[in-house]
Image (cartoon, rainbow, N blue to C red; front, side, top):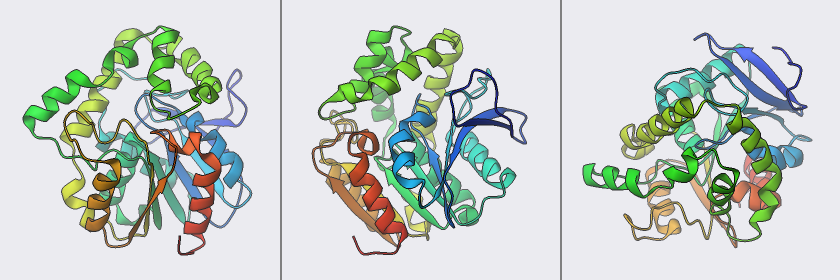
Length: 290
């Protein structure tokens, strides 16, 4: 575990068993360790507000998945299985105990994939606006690839990246400017071809490695948090149901899950309403009925 010159404060790096080096934030202490997994083409800094509010009670570790953030960016095809294996390896290398997995968006599907592969990986699961609850047939997969804001995700222009992030907020998206500044800096150091390949293969992984039909195998307690005004999940063009309807359908398949809809929040619920989300997480981990 090392700290490299030029990296933001709080970041560390470690080489995984597969040979790739990942960066991560490690702050706080407590009997439980929350392992935080970011979403598509994001980075660990998307959890900054949550770590600030949780680190007094828990050890908080937020990973930059390979190909993202300050982690190594290999020229490979990414997948949910690959990401899940990397997170599990980090848990083992750091010898973490009493782990709570917490994933946002694509990170939620990564967390679900990890628990389906290794049920002992965590004692509890928190899903913030998770991917993986929607089901896509072949036609819908094709349509999804064409309607998702791939142009913004692929763009190296700051304005396009800013618009893509802003669309994930319900109100006052300028609160994400610090996050966007970090992501622009990361993006400018990322070869465009490799960035496009990472985003494309990650999207394909979400579509082609479904978890919905196996949600009943998740045996640990689960807290599902959605912004009540999430504009991204579900995809409104393909699945014209409400976010809450989608979430309740998935929740019903799990053995011990509860759902919290946060008012006046969009897809970046953990950032837009950090205090409310942190309060829900603390109550959930304390075993309180929400």
